[in-house]
Length: 190
Length: 190
Image (cartoon, rainbow over all chains, first blue to last red; front, side, top):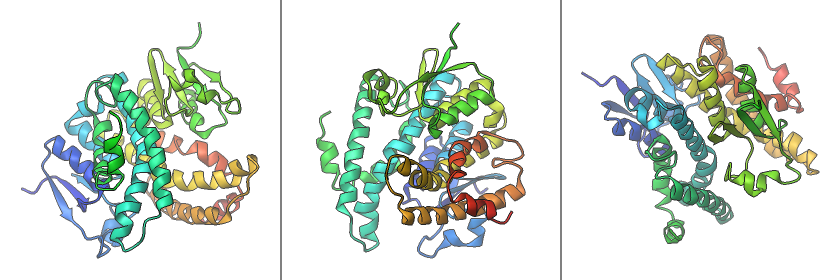
């Protein structure tokens, strides 16, 4: 029988990787429905009916169709591994929410700008804008100073237990590690 | 007795208004601790100990200290009005999460850019960059086309019941209505 859970998208996308990571972590059987960005599959009517914003990923779980990677991640974990959302303790849930928002609004804007300039644009035949890279490396350094202090006081971002707040950082960080800024962040004092 | 819930920030900030709206909606007794942006209160050590990113709002609820406006909003509603998060129905919760992410990643980037250019910069003595306004009005139009279709099919963004997904739009929309783009969005076909 085909899995009840389908993910539409391409696994190379960090946005798609976020829910895939949660599905793998929770041991959920799922099907990754192949799509081609080059062929414009995300602009086709059947896909726009699933996500009117035309972005991957989309998750189908039975009759439920979801988009936005962090919302999908929450759904998968709430259903299959709620401890990664801190469920059961209002304080733990609140701290997971805080550090998920930090990932989305402090960490991700800087990292995604660096990844776009250093990896995506060159892949598309464009040239990186070094001023944008420098500006965002400076922003990222300030964010990572906060992380350094936080992770000196608690084992994981949301507290003593691993959570979606940590997992949600993986997909873009994997690409950050491929950029030349890696030399900087690996050489930072620990 | 002083309220157990304290909010640090200035109410004119849309980021502060988001949790205030939830506290009011849930009928929670709270204290808004006055702070001055002009005096740099958000850069002082006592505030940085509450939020190392130096941003308002911060909420204290007993021993719990939270930052990031959407995380605070979730905490307030989970504790005092969980139906606004769709709690109790996994499907409803997932749809609230989807449209909260849409607010954060589709609607808010365009609207906040317009508000910064049309209201914040002039207040600080700067001049608006009309190209940035035009670019973001175009982005906002596409987002609102999706909203129009969504709200033709369901009463509220996440479904038939009002939720945090709707409330979370209010603070920046209130400022958008003060900009000259108001003429455009009020004259859009309904």
